[in-house]
Length: 290
Image (cartoon, rainbow, N blue to C red; front, side):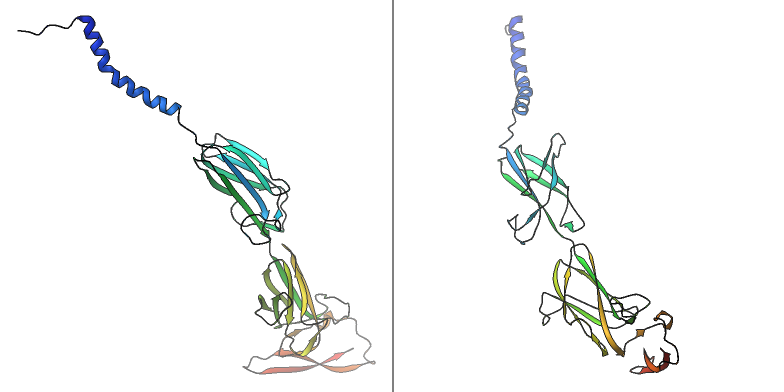
């Protein structure tokens, strides 16, 4: 015997009930996506400064750097711009959770400053909210110390290339501060042109110590103080008197001052050159007329 048939209206109701779970499944994600929580807002504190005290974070001794700061969301749908104040700080409030890119452009940067790190940093605003600090730290660019070892042959009071004798193989040492008993921070030696280059040194005060060659003496004190400026080259001439023994002295007769007549004075002047034999030095005497 066949079971009783369900009325037509009842069949439509049964089909609707069977479709209900699928409709609910499609509706729930849509509701979840629309109502997704954003978490608590964060605050971004950005500091741009010259670190003078060496401590973590910007302190009272540090030097603010004027800059324009930009905060961009990773999705690119949010861009915030602010300028640092007199305290080197730029603040951004109500930042929703997610990833961001913080960049800056110094508006008053000079050759004396250099950035210690990247000009762009990636930061994250946590879901629970927080104060997120970003630091762009600058330092003073190093200076360069150069000079020349010479003898003021024409008595002009300063070094004149081509007119004054220059001394080669003169050791030059640089010490941090006034003390010369420790380890030098830089060492060098004058070349055949009398010039020396002691490389880059940090901004500050130093003491320069010269080891004169036998037969010569330094004019103006030895050791002597020297100050290095940030991002600049300091040229420090060192004047000597006497005749160097065991080091090359370059002096061209054509570069000397005008000679007095032959009848007034005639004398022998030694010209020192280094010999080619190991441990040997050749002393050549030449007649020089004044």
